Amino acid sequence: MNIEIDREAALDAGPWRRNLIVCVFGSFTTIVGMTLLLPFLPLYVEQLGVTDHAAIVQWSGIAYGAAFFSAALTAPLWGRLADRYGRKLMLIRASLGMAIAMSLIGMAHNVYELVGLRLLTGLLGGYASGSTVLVAAQTPKARSGWAIGVLSAGIMAGSLVGPLIGGVLPGLIGIRATFFLIGGVIFITFLGTTFLIREEARPKAVEGSKARGGWSLVRDKRPVIAMWGTGLLLMVANMSIEPIITVYVAQLVEAPQVTFVAGLVMSAAAFGSLLSSSHLGKLADRIGHWRIINVCLAVSALLLIPQAFVVSGWELILLRFLMGLALGGLLPCIASVIRHNVPDAVTGSMLGYSISAQYAGQVIGPLAGGFIGGHIGMRAVFLGTSVLMACGAIGNFVVERKNQDADSLRRSPLASSKTA
Image (spheres, one colour):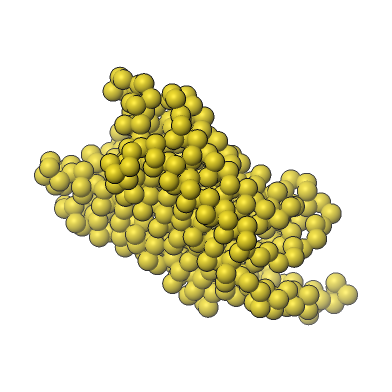
């Protein structure tokens, strides 16, 4: 116990605030790099020699999703390597790798090179996920919710700003120059990471930590599994309406406004999460991370129901914004609960699997939403997602109670005497 207290005191006096600033900037710039090509990607695919309209759409989807696909596969690996060799080293690798990969995309000669380089971007990248690992491990536990909330705000800001920049820069400097420019900006992230981040001494590896990513060292696995499921649900809730949103909005507004309103609907949830993540993370540090998770899931489940019955575009925008405010508390709390329930020596591995679960939600959400919307109806997408979020709230509540009971049992005088 004294060792844990001493370590927390050392972290509090350490450079965790400066590390957080660098990680927020780096996560913002790398996420911008991952998303800025969305508005002009079909144009770039056409420049690379694809002429058929259907093929342009198909290759654009493949190229965009390729980076996230390879990132999902490699997130646990980078988390495990971070535990073994250092979290700062993984951030240096990710920022330098992305700077190179983004610049190379600007020199692609055909669509196959483009897809391959997008796969390389996801493979070499992972700065945002690596930042989550470093901030969670190097921030005092009493402030981890707020710190990860601030980092999550930077990540979501990158997701919002990236497409906006991608809609402006190519018209000013050209598509290829846009990739060179963002590669240069990410190189600045590499320099800041190398020279400004200071990583505190990592806990020594414990015997067995290399096996199965340290899973055998996790005393109570239920909270960790619950957080992986919660991360997946979060992304499903955010992404399930993506395939149907334009068609759904077309039923609510006049034809000339459809794309504009659909864009606002897509951005509303992310904007709400951007505003609330740090505040809810700070609140969770005071009143408990489990409590915020349960409330956020329950509120999101309730807000999804009226989204199925809206009669105007502004109602849907408002409800998605409110839902984003609620969902903003989940990412920092998920990481904080994992941090509190796993040994420090395997924090990176467990958070890496959590990030993979979130990427899986980004894949499952649109697939499920498109299938349900096409075969059952668009309202069923909202109502089905509401049921999932409600089940998540109930499941987390049950796991929390069992976790509390287990903690009480371990701290009881009887348990202490048996241990002695």
